[in-house]
Image (cartoon, rainbow, N blue to C red; front, side, top):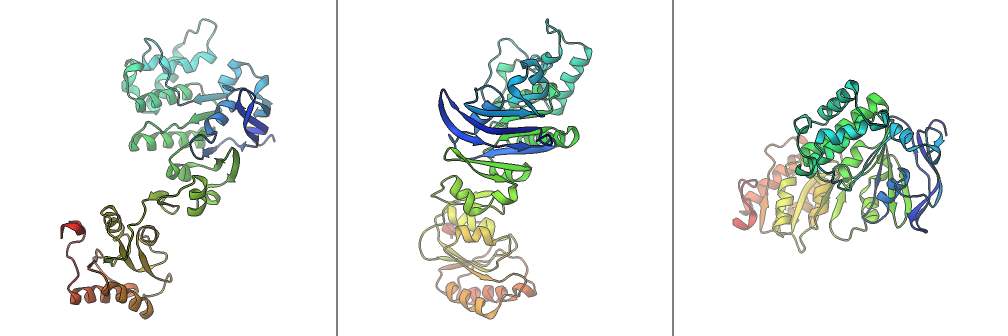
Length: 375
């Protein structure tokens, strides 16, 4: 097991004497990110708190670089492992710089006095998370997102070999989510950190993780690379989804389709149809889409939102059979929309569909500007 920096052996976690999850086996090398995903209440935070000794293990062992964490002193552990949890700490009369500086205490003497080199590392950590301008601000007077960056800076200040984070992006806007995860990924690559964290944003977990642990029904249900974990059917099962759908290709959720027979036919493709599909769904208008190649970027969204999708096999021109099916559906619709600006040889028959809609008198102009219900 020496190749793994963090690993657990028959780890059982819970509260009091009540086991919540048993026989947890985690294996993580330096230079890797492992992410826990799963529904609320499944036990992700409990696992992280047990790894970091905030909760006592009910069984098994956690090893850090081949040594049991139970054998390490608090100071030694703090030099190797940094922790960023979701609990909102409320330090009295501390500036953001003071909070970050507390990450240097494992390296100071009994009096906790920081030297010139310590303060240099404090300032470097704050700049790394884009928080240099917060140095003199009262920590209790800044936003949740700013606090999260300060706590990450504190963890960086410890110069650890591993970091454990519980939902580090929860209070961040889009820009700062990406900045924080980019910083983590950079540190993982350059400093060979081992990172264990939990995330609710599946799209981010899919993109940043080397390994993913799925916590579900009080067990570790699945463990593997993102490519093995993120499929439409499994994510919907993991979270017990009964409404809408999950799109693994885009890493996003789609709402339920409008019910009923198609009222509008959308001649889409190449990504041009996606905003139209979503607008029609928002307005509660059932629609049909086609003819779409099954490898077209429009296809997974149309499949999730349309009442009917007419398709063509990948890498083949739209055939006569698919065209006739689409023409039949189009003739039964009240209106048609065609956001495609140009047609090529592969979708020439979609051009014929547009001309058919024009002859039928049901083609709406400028489908991207107004909603169908306003026409």
